[in-house]
Image (tube, rainbow, N blue to C red; front, top):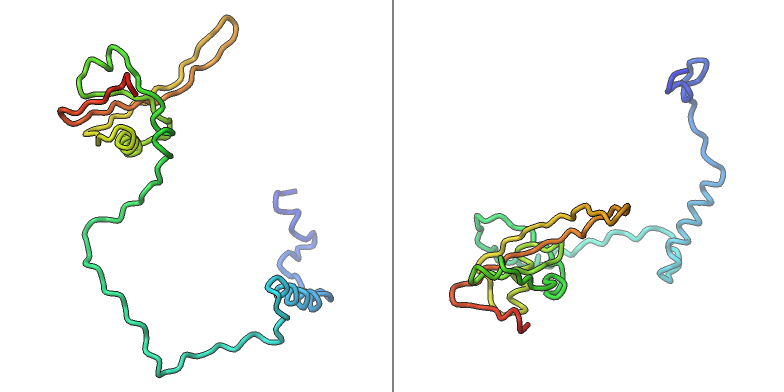
Length: 173
């Protein structure tokens, strides 16, 4: 027996199905559907569908809005931000390596944060618009404690470059 043989008739009458008969309760079902469709709105069921009303010929069409000049720039999809600044910037990372470069500050950020999100968050918290944002993804590492095998948490950090002469007092904030 083949895969499709269960839908085929044993006498070879697969394509010779007769006309389908209407279900005897179908007219009553249609009437119930029509009645129940009108019940939630609080209206009685209409006897006939409402006639389409035509607009009078004397009414003028509304004035079209003035067209904007065409630009050659494509429309960009705007992604909503991940959240508020406190949900994006977790904490500053102060290490020897991160404090070596003047004007560069390192923050631990949310794993779904983008460069734009970090830029807006730093501007909101510290009031300084960053010149550059570099994102580094730190994957979790496999670790062992005796026989127990586990994994450290994956993180993301952002290195923020401020314009010349601007500083952030990380230790005070």
